[in-house]
Length: 372
Ligand code: V47
Image (cartoon, rainbow, N blue to C red):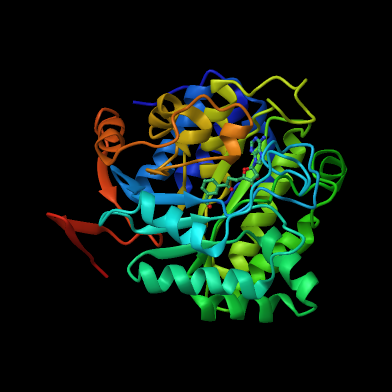
């Protein structure tokens, strides 16, 4: 039976998707402009099932944000604070280790560690923090520091990106989270994050990390002042780097949360746009293995539906999330493993607990092993 799409502009794209042909920038714009969400989602689901069958991945992780002090004053951000701000915090090394221990159980397989650009914390401090975590929690994977934090530490230490990353690897970093990419278009960055490294530098840090053997995630912040061209340009730059290095593991579209930011006049994203971003990403990023519907950002309800619109991962237990909650997120700060399982099973998908690099984790009682 031939299915007819409501939006005739999608027919040519469907032919390409069915034949496994790479989509162009123009196709990306067409997908973003279409209101035929069922057709866009149908194609994304086809690709998702081609790549991952009926599986949806999740992990048992814990976020740690050692400091919210940040020298940048990005308009998009509600998390970063100036050092003098009475609300600002910076953990001591002992506090980081103690925070990690508080959320830790035998089940936790990943610490996701990101924070502000602190003017005084040195690369040595971060290395000591990482070594201390590895010593105390040797089985837990350290996914730590964004490209932005790495570029800042490199500049302050007056060493190259490669040397900075190598020191972090030696101290225990095993992969990098995907944050801080925002939108690569300079015109947009000037408004939302003018104190941050530019898009080319973000990509250069990622390229260097991949060359040194680290895998990383990648993200795109949408729902502020960007347009469809900016979104497609961003996705194509990630796709081009992935062609070169193969180092990205997952892409996470991040919906802008305006509350408590300098851009609070911008309305929050809609469920329609959240779902569309998942689907278009799955279709455009044909070389990135996983598309993550991050439940903290899109709510567990939308993340659940996203599993039928291109996403194959709903992220993890998280434990304590600050960046989105400072920006007004009303989702809970953590989900139990059993809740993640229910969200996946009720969408008719088969849950697979994964480690950071998407190897299945099997458990028997409290102990667990990672199948390689
Ligand atoms: O880097 C900051 C963004 C990112 C706001 O790699 C905001 O597995 C929306 O990167 N509204 C942090 N977004 C989150 C992130 C992430 C999350 C989950 C998993 C992974 C991963 C990465 O959130 C920041 C920035 O891009 N952000 N402020 C805001 N007001």
